[in-house]
Length: 95
Image (cartoon, rainbow, N blue to C red):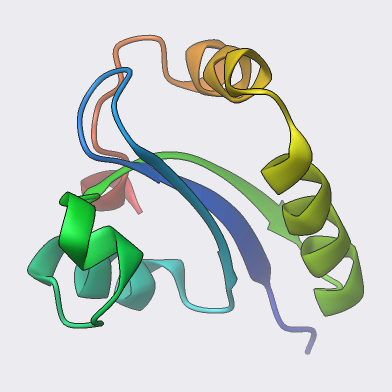
């Protein structure tokens, strides 16, 4: 049985502060962000809403994608979110 990995984008609000990460447990990780359990960037800036994610079956591919996405312009990141989630709904409850 293969493991699943996720590259995800969290936001503080629509068009707000963005955070890109990678995890093997998107439900747990989005909950940790929402509850402010991990000190750091997302807690400091109130980045709590899961607005985008991609699924991978290879951790190396997921990390590579995360690294590339972090180098995207803000406009490109907003395009990705807009294509998957135009209303910027919190996707965590639907997982």
